[in-house]
Image 1: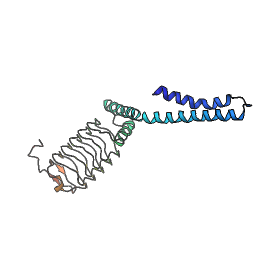
Image 2: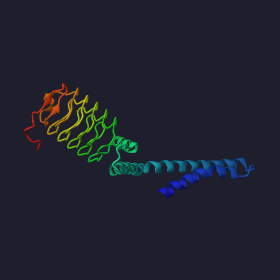
Image 3: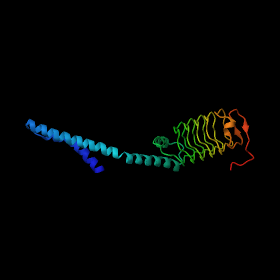
Image 4: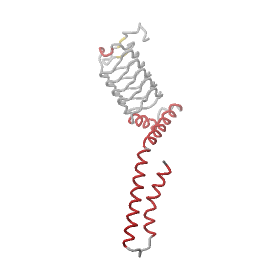
Length: 225
């Protein structure tokens, strides 16, 4: 495919040179025939190039995704807190509809990242900076968000079932219609968050600071497991 594409490009590039190489005194009717042939060759080469470019789109997309995951994995291996390349790679992968399940990004600075409806199930975002992150409708089931900074984050409709939010900062977070069953909110701070105690049925509350500043120890004597 690459050889054919290169050939088509060379044909397109060669047409002007071929035209310039003809003598100026060539008969008009001959020139008309030659011009028509060259025009047809140029058109065919252009069509071939376009078709091959379209056919190669899946391969280029797969290569782009592979490179994006390499960036994410390298940042995790190096334990980098700040990585603009990782930040952009995660948004690009999500935009292309890929799952981010099992993502390793502990202590990462992902403030204001745009990942609505993302699949972040079973990911490790402990101690991550997720201030003002858009996680609306995201699947965070089983995720590790211990001590994560989620101030002003949008978690409306998010699936937080089985999520570990121990010691997380959820001040001013948007939590309306989030799913909390079996979520661990021990020592989490919910100051001014958009949530009511009734919404937390099924969640584990122990030394949990509610939106009004009240500390709830409802489940301290029971086990999250």
